[in-house]
Amino acid sequence: MTDIDSPSAVVRAIVAGRDGDVDAALRLIAPESLDQGVRVTREDWRRKWDYMRAGSADMEVITEHTVENGEWVANRYAIRGTHTGDFFGAAPTGERFVTGGLDMIRVVDGLLVEHWAYAAPPRPEQ
Image (cartoon, rainbow, N blue to C red):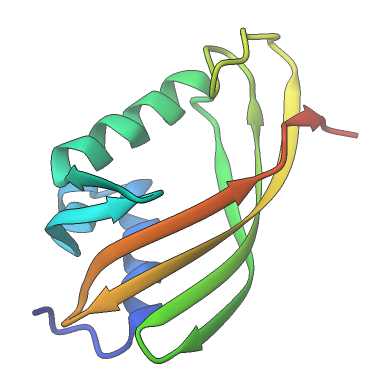
């Protein structure tokens, strides 16, 4: 259990920490959780975030809309960055990109326990 009072506040703290204090962000994730239906650990989350940063060191995730319903939080977001490394299977282009996505996150007792996401394929930033 955390001191953060709502599921959407937990999600905001994870997003902020992912780009700063990664250990603080990881403490807001259950020791074992589901990511896209696969059981993962906090270290799996760390590796996922490291992989994303390796593909775009200047990646910025902008939450555009959030809806909270009980334990669930849904986000619509944009991701922008420079494609400098492997990014979800795509070879680096060195070009700026943008993509959009949606995710649903379930928070129980102040900890992320389940995550589902869809992101559109990256396209050149205009």
